[in-house]
Length: 182
Image (cartoon, rainbow, N blue to C red; front, side, top):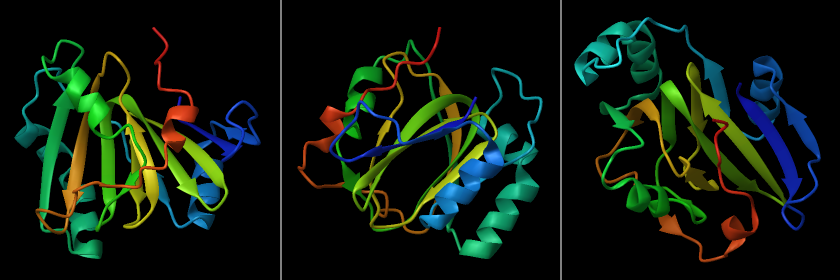
C-alpha cells in the first residue's frame, strides 16, 4: 500500500505523520507543491512491451502531456535479476534535485521517493497506480530497494532535464533505506 511518512530532518527515528490513504497523501503532498494522483489499474502482461504499456495508458499520458508540455515519454523496467541493479540503485540514493519536474507513474512494483522540504523529510512509498510529480529544484532521493521490481512511465520536458544535481549534504544516509516486504 502507498504510504506517506513525515519526519523532522534531524530525527529519522520519530514519525511525525503517517498515512496510507491516497486522498490524504495527495492533500498533504499538494500543500507542499508535490502532485500525487492515482490512475486506474490496467491488466498488463508481465512481458508487455513499453509500447503496449503506453498504449494502455494513452488517455492519461495524453492528458498529462497536453497539460504540461512534456516532449518525451518512456517506460523503464527494473527487475531483481538486472545485472546493473546495484549501480542503478546507488545512482540516486543521495540528496539531489533536477532542473525539471520528475514525473513517474508506477505501472507495477514500488519505489520510495524521499523529499527534503524545509526542515522536514517526507517518505512517499509509490506503488502500482501511483503518479508522483516532484517539482524542479526539490531536494529528494529515490530508493528502488536491494532487489528492485518496478515498471514506471516517465515524462520529460528536456532530454537533459533529469540530470541529478547532488547537494552533498549526507542527509539521505541518516534515513532508512527502502526494504520492500517480501
